[in-house]
Length: 502
Image 1: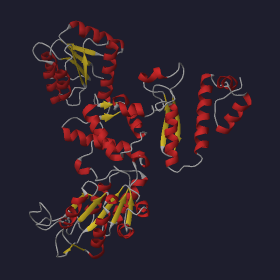
Image 2: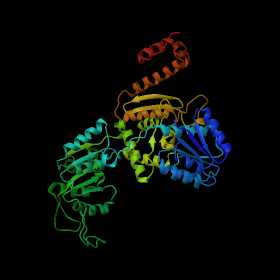
Image 3: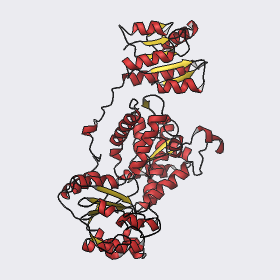
Image 4: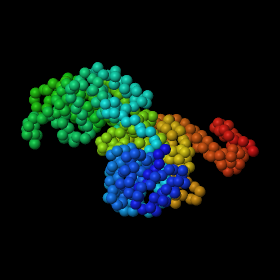
């Protein structure tokens, strides 16, 4: 492993860092100026570079720029006595790994250097080249079914209804259906029917004649005409006003429509793909959606899985979105630590793939360093979600059909709400998390929820007590406040190993 280079005109700073890193068995090499360090780069490179900002001659920012130009992957930690916003912004814009203000805690500085060292030694993730990136990513069985359906429909002009929660990628699937259809060389026109005011939606869909209404100073082609010979994607079809549903039904039935204010029928040669996150059957029962239109649209139904149904796809989606976001911003791609990826995989993301993409954009801009840890994620995620098993704090894993959840201690700032020795039991404590897990299981239609969670809860308590008593079940029973026969029976029922009588 190469040494860590320290660049600072202050000899005392160099000495302190050298001694602290020597205690960690880390080799160092020191320079009193940026010019000396740049000269050394002609023949050698460090594993990590630690540099002051304000130095005579070459500043730390000049050194940072020169180093990043030659060695873009080298982690550079910038330190300075001038902890002002401009320096911090300039450092990060220049590609610094992290920013540390003097006076700094030496233990924290060493921990930061170790983190940069791990980043330097970590193998770079393989970026997905734009030409190799498929239009839709997914390896989960549920997504493979979607891909197979797209393949079967590739040579068809049949109407398709795409259903799924918000953010699952319904428009991406519609574009893929168009791309792999005989109409691929013709227009793909998308319209979100929920985003257009009711008074304008009819004109938006079918166009209007000059003078059809106040402000209609010229004839305008609607989306149906714009999509001629191609594909028209109608998103959020469940929100279409009832009277417009009648006009859409007529187009689907006979292939003709009238512009607003027009008297001559216009022929429509358009393939319609509709999408909704709503339950159209229920809207039909409620009288909000025409049953005959529903049957016209529901020729082929394609249901997109939510992200919680394809958790194994989250790592590849995260890597793809981080590469995409970095490319858009012109910065180096961030990488997730294994622990952070496991944490993200266990999150409940109601916004599905769209929310995950937005999160990756946030990480690219806001997360410090190039390798992102759990603590670098947005606080609303790390505080609202359970701590991964194996992390700091008390964690009891509960597995279910929707993934793994932990009953974990809250952030340190909440500790004062609990009694000494107890965990909070409000919405942010373990009872709130238990209620959340029960709600998820019930909403997914699981049965015997009480028995499943009860057995897991008892198993977690007994395993923890046995761990504290080094496997002595009699002592564990006393600590738990239950009888000897009871704990013996529970250990057998729950299949717990490692218990002993003495």
